[in-house]
Length: 198
Image (tube, rainbow, N blue to C red; front, side, top):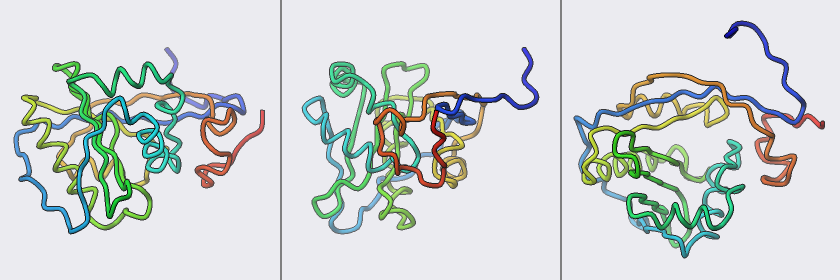
């Protein structure tokens, strides 16, 4: 298959370079100490609307859309699955971060979604949330933890994962419909990436 050169996309399509990483969970940080006012709350299937609001608050800037397009029943099944752990990081009563761990496949356990709301960036909160993720994976009996990020994510996301002990293992190109054009995300989401009208 030809992989060199440019590939022209239709105006409604976006493409991202995806990097897959793995953490071998050999060195695990200790339980993080949260600043006053912070707490982790576990979410389940009863919290679908809260989950989607938090997912959007964390990811709209980076065009996260998968959970927003997912039917309620499918999302409920994920949130209710015992090997899935979903946490809201709460700061002074308001959701400030999302941590979703998916242990359904013990051979490839995944840090499915991870991030903090924009006004919590740069405060060391992400490091504490990552320490929690690694610790939860180890406590759950996992030997490794997978994650992937892409070129549409926060510019420092890949470096953050590598500094947390993940190592890159492969790459892929993901092509998808621009979620701003079908109403999945607001048209003004991710203003750094111009909309192309079909």
